[in-house]
Image (cartoon, rainbow, N blue to C red; front, side, top):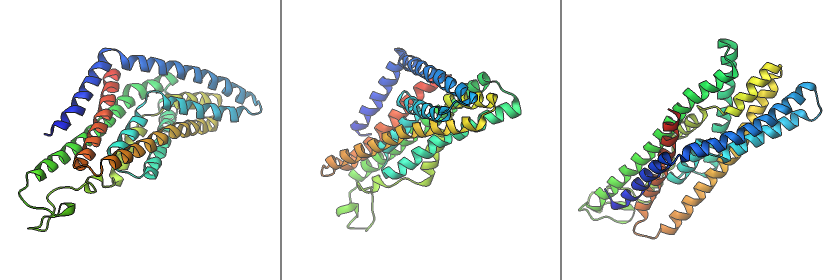
Length: 300
């Protein structure tokens, strides 16, 4: 295994140990919970105004829900980590990654709507039980899925390192683009090969990993509006939150794609260029896995 691989692996392990032992995950989660409570109180007041029929109450509710989704996504969360890590680790057009980010966020709203109305209509769950189901069961599943994607990115990068290492020791003489002058075949990937665009399967995995966990703010709004008899306002609010979240994840995705392109452009003329691509993917995969593993350990 190349010595370059040791650096991101060691960094990821140290970061996970430090965050877990120092209570870093707990501190971040406590801060996020406090901010969410403040927004939920404002949303509750706007819902009471909407039920009274106050003018402008619906517009205020949508604005607050959008802002809640935005600031919730700015804080600690797995969605933007996955989108950013994937955009950094794999070559994917920024528009495609933006669409994936948008669909993932809207998927969280759909999951919340499905959970709430299945819970209250079929199982007669209370708000506390619905939020408990989301946090106790769906959140760990989501963290595990995100961690698996990070591990998958890392394993794929290690395979590329192994292939490059094999190519380095190949006795054949190669022309440009890695084509063998003796047999006419490629024995290893060129820099363009290791930057191939991702497939529909990758996109579906990303969307499912994010969408499986509903936003607790959306659950709060959906349950309250159902109890108040203004269910459609709650559904609209859930989608407004999703759009607020999407703004952040799309921005993170575009920044990651831009950063990746810039780094590759800087190393494109270097003899280490083909090693640099899987190194980025390995570092991104380990980052996603480290954060997801920490959140999963905290949730269990």
